[in-house]
Image (tube, rainbow, N blue to C red):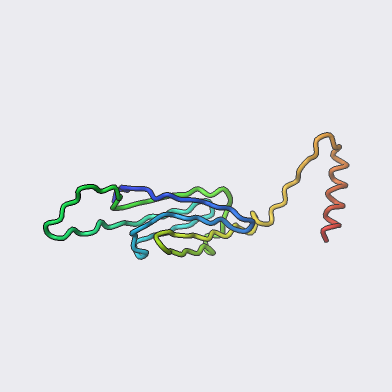
Amino acid sequence: APTTWTPAATLVESEDALTLHVQLPGVNPDEIDIQANRDAIAISGNRVAPKLAEGETVRRNEFRYGAFRRVVSLPVGIEPKSVTADYEAGVLVLNLPKSEDVRNRVVKVNVAGAKPAEIAEATDEATEAAQ
């Protein structure tokens, strides 16, 4: 089915995880499909328009109905098998634990003006101190 609308989303990062909030008011949780891989989350589904009673006419409609799809690229890798979802008050909240290699990543930072040997010694001292 062609996509007729795209839900709004907010992505928040903490030390160990990403949290994705997606606005899906009026969507039946059974109609939501979530697919996760290391680098992205795809959320799709359908919001069904309410049926009008006999004799009723819509005079204004600013709601979007029908199929939706939202793909969110992630700034860091996640553990797709550990993703959890909660749906409350029309907001889908996904907890996306960062992958182990992202959480434990150590990045070497060079200090301007320092000689490479000084950096290596400082790194060795910092490693010993941390142990």
